[in-house]
Length: 211
Ligand SMILES: Nc1ncnc2c1ncn2[C@@H]1O[C@H](COP(=O)(O)OP(=O)(O)OP(=O)(O)O)[C@@H](O)[C@H]1O
Ligand SMILES: Cc1cn([C@H]2C[C@H](O)[C@@H](COP(=O)(O)O)O2)c(=O)[nH]c1=O
Image 1 (tube, rainbow, N blue to C red):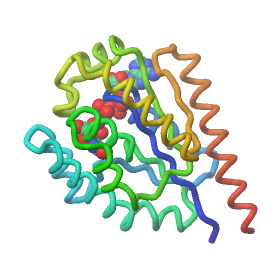
Image 2 (cartoon, rainbow, N blue to C red; image 1 turned 45 degrees about the vertical axis):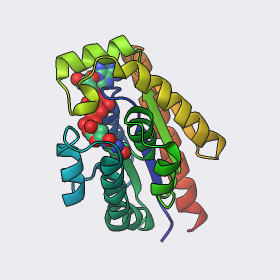
Image 3 (tube, rainbow, N blue to C red; image 1 turned 135 degrees about the horizontal axis):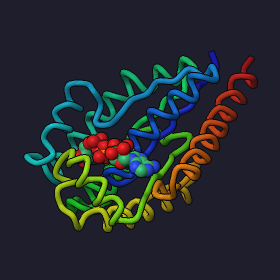
Image 4 (cartoon, rainbow, N blue to C red; image 1 turned 180 degrees about the vertical axis):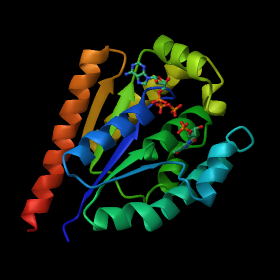
């Protein structure tokens, strides 16, 4: 069985990660690519605890909790699906820990990197951003999903932190595609078609190489 592909989608709250995940899943599935669509914190027990308690759990405790969930998620869902030849699309991954736990909550970056040192690097990371005022407006309309979306000053800091963390991991060899989701429907359509073709192409090359 050929190895599949692990794709992480990251970025600030309301950047459009879940929307892109849904649309990419549907496009790729429509072209015959097998997809596992997932999220972090995961839907498992540890993930549900982390997701529902970002107001109670902060700093080091949350860094360890999302780290524990990540390793469990890798072991039970991500690695088996990639091993079975699927494309795994994951809404949030290690960049979120570097930005939220280190950048926002102030856990030393070296500690966050250490907690995540054995987390598989993605084959591709997609980093979505939008201007902070656009993010604030989307959050005001949609509502907050947790502590990191309550503070209206955070979107601006998050955008910068995601850009910085993505650049570091790109320099370390992680294939990275960054996109601004505030560019209007035509640009979003072109992003979606481009990503479908890039991911489908990477997946089918692996598939045919091992055939
Ligand atoms: N390209 C876009 N243009 C305009 N609005 C968008 C776009 N993408 C998403 N939205 C809207 O912005 C809001 C947030 O989108 P979404 O839930 O996909 O973001 P997210 O990054 O997954 O957020 P969170 O991190 O809070 O889960 C939703 O109301 C969605 O409809
Ligand atoms: C992966 C990850 C997540 N979090 C936090 C950030 C948010 O409050 C929730 C996820 O909710 P969303 O609706 O999917 O945005 O979990 C975190 O603090 N650190 C992480 O690594």
